[in-house]
Figure 1: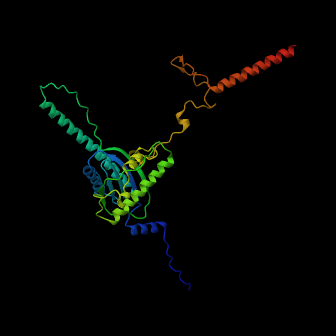
Figure 2 (figure 1 turned 120 degrees about the horizontal axis):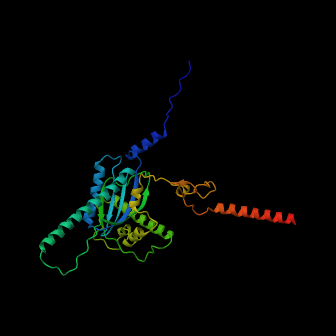
Length: 313
């Protein structure tokens, strides 16, 4: 009687991936996106807009909930978000939709206020010049600093916002400098953000109010000049452009599909001599290869004439 073969532990790559997901409490690959921007709202109001978008994303179906940390200054902010690629980009789309709705709401408020003023001032001649309409904006500039794909561990298990007043930067930054300078300043900013995330992990009640400029915690805050430099950098992608490119595959047009007629000798010779409505189309300028053929024919004819005249002599 033949001995039975031992049971082999056959594991596929899918089994390994699923086990890693279970250890990290994930259902799919997670990413970490860090983006910064310049806002035009009070700090409390801009925090409410971000918080509402996070809640809207997590309340719908998503593989991984979006968590992160928001650092808010008076006019600037830095947002660190973690989640699956779809949920993070869904958060960005919700954020831009919230911006559109807010602008429409503020325009209606401005129109109602203007109508009330017109009714109150009816019959009175105003000598003052008409005021220009207010350009409502929630964000002035938005840039994506970096994206970490397929992260092995998440830094946050919830979402919160922290307000602060950063220290001033000593020295000036040249936005028209070489690429190496932009990369170096981006590295410095990301290093500060890493320290900021570490402080937030260690202290759930982290606060920067009442701290002196010499406090070690202040080193974890990116300076306003540094953020302004990165937002003005031409080497860093615009966040709206990144959202536009998500799940979008553009059609590639080859050179020969854009140029007509083709600059080759395969173009039909009688292309411009077609008869249309008993009238001939005016010929276009002669192609370069036709000039070459004409010159060659003239040279051959000239050589034949010369050879004929020499033979008659």
